[in-house]
Length: 145
Image (tube, rainbow, N blue to C red):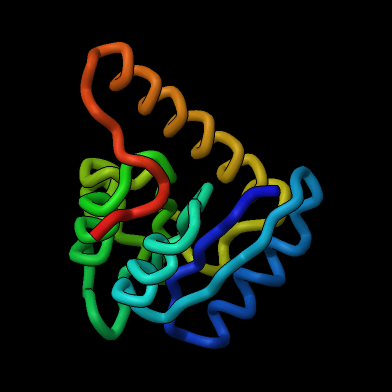
């Protein structure tokens, strides 16, 4: 079972994301939803997470700040950015700062989302294995303060 952390402060957007995930039939998952990066930190300190969906507009972080904060906490779980903005420059910056993908809210279907999830997990796993082969330390999915 995949453990997904959804970091989204808008209840409507969180509900829509959950409904879309419910339509993904390729894998079993459990979604934990929080509304702030600081709440994500609490979850990550208590349990391993396989994938993070991150909104870029949160009460305690704006823009790429939340992505930077999460990528500094862990390396093994891929982060997929969710945004209402179709800003290509922002999407490229998110990818440069460690996001595995950048999705625009309301534009995905279940089949495409399932593929994005699977590919993101595989790419991140390959990245972690490559770091291990290079002798660089990788942190676990559980963040330790």
